[in-house]
Amino acid sequence: MSQRDTIDQAIWKVVATIPKGKVMAYGEVARRAGLPRGARRVGPALGRAPEAMKLPWHRVLGAGGKIAFPRDHPGYQRQVDLLSVDGLLLVKGKVAASDVITAQSMDELLWG
DNA sequence: TAATTGACCGATC
DNA sequence: AGATCGGCCAATT
Image (cartoon, rainbow, N blue to C red; front, side):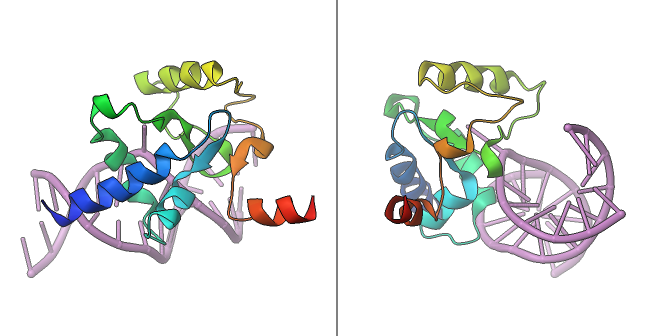
């Protein structure tokens, strides 16, 4: 058990809570996992997640709802497909802002 | 020990 | 809209 494994698990736990039809940014996932400035550690952590865990890794996007993979990366299209299964279609490489769970989501809930 | 490298982020040009 | 840049932080080389 390394320190990193513990952090990975915290990240996986957060990702597992993302509801179908919604997405969350790397930075936000990191923040909720107790890593306020650990956005860069989320991607690698997802890559280390066991397949058996069936983690919804595709619901984790870059800031502003953009897919983090380069367009030519094989993972890009796979992520697009998985998102479409969730009912999320990308427009110009991004999902609608209203589908991104942000730190302000609670405020919007309260304010309407 | 120092340099490099990311599935990042926000500001700026 | 797209490219660049500095900041970020830990794993890897």
